[in-house]
Amino acid sequence: MKSFVVLSALVALAYAAPQYTTQQKYQQQYEIIPIIKQTQEINVDGSYQYSYETGNGIAAQEQGYLKNPGIKDAEAQVAQGSFSYTSPEGVPVVLTYTADENGFRAEGAHLPTPPPIPEAILRALQYIESRPQQPQQPQQQFPQQQFPRQPFRG
Image (cartoon, rainbow, N blue to C red):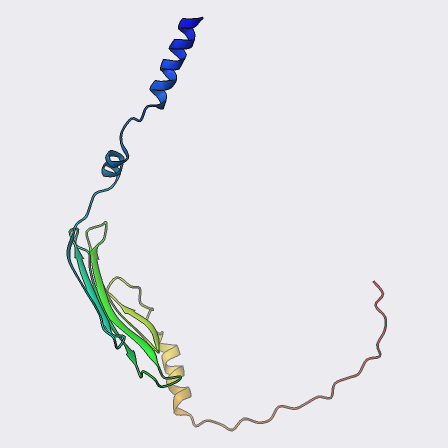
């Protein structure tokens, strides 16, 4: 019986022993990508710029500033930048963007574009645009009918 307890304890210790260290596990699952270049500048007036480039070909840059500082309801943070990387399929992806009081606008060859407007719809829009605007006629108002209030009978 003693040998069974000792053997069980040894088996439990063997299962509980770490198989590898956390550092070894991390290095096996993830490749460490170096930062090749990185710059950043933050100014007292609220303007800034940053850029970086990594060892696997990712690059990004952005600059921004406060537009119309001190003018109520006209202040806007403006940011312009771009980033690039290579997709898993090996296709280079480049995106440029602007964000300001008009919203966020991105441009890139990989982004979807709307289909062209069909010719018939384009002609109809041109026709509507060429016609002078007609004054709107007031809509006829109908008197509202009053119904006697009755209790709900559900």
